[in-house]
Image 1 (cartoon, helix red, strand yellow):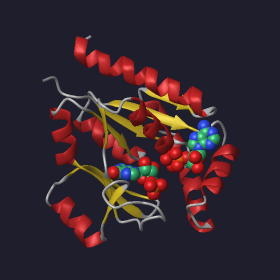
Image 2 (cartoon, rainbow, N blue to C red; image 1 turned 180 degrees about the vertical axis):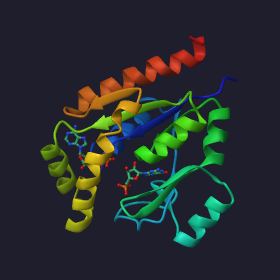
Image 3 (cartoon, rainbow, N blue to C red; image 1 turned 90 degrees about the vertical axis):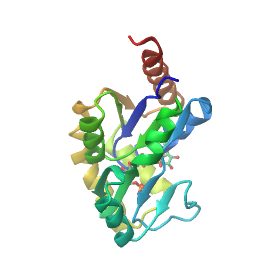
Image 4 (tube, rainbow, N blue to C red; image 1 turned 135 degrees about the vertical axis):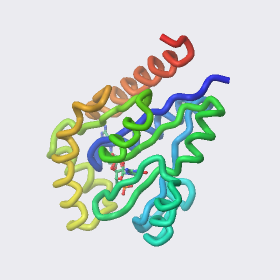
Length: 193
Ligand code: ADP
Ligand code: 5GP
């Protein structure tokens, strides 16, 4: 069975990464798998252990680092986040395309280890719209929200290192762009070209 392909989706907090990859997995349920990251961040209301994240304390997270269990990990907005390597490898070997939604530092690590990974950067149409979306999502307190907006500028300066950029203005249009990238890149694996 051919291996699946690894897709890395990055971009500032509030750009719409989570929304877009859920659309992708709904449209391609039989061929995609969304990786579940580990994090030391506290769960938001409605977030489910093992579905949205594996929530853990810093001690356990650092033990996973020491055991070399992460494909990549990084400190993002003051918390630790990492991609457990074993699940990713298992799904790829089953022929599934694995989607990672991770920050730019993690994306850099994945690209160094897995040069074949397809890297996609999602940007909001403007800083103002990003702020409105983050406020509309209402998942962060003011201080945390400000930190995410400040980090957005720094993150956006890294977008040239990515294979594709999607401007998430109209959601349907951005989702169509993601599907088209996905179809093109997943087909490349099958045909080898
Ligand atoms: P991220 O995962 O990049 O942090 P989310 O997917 O959580 O971002 O999106 C942030 C907020 O913006 C959410 O409330 C989401 O519903 C909303 N959103 C995402 N894409 C769009 C869009 N194209 N137009 C309007 N709102 C959007
Ligand atoms: P949130 O707290 O909003 O769920 O995520 C904050 C940031 O952490 C986002 O940029 C998200 O992409 C990133 N992130 C989530 N999981 C991982 C991961 O496993 N590794 C890395 N490096 N970043 C992650």
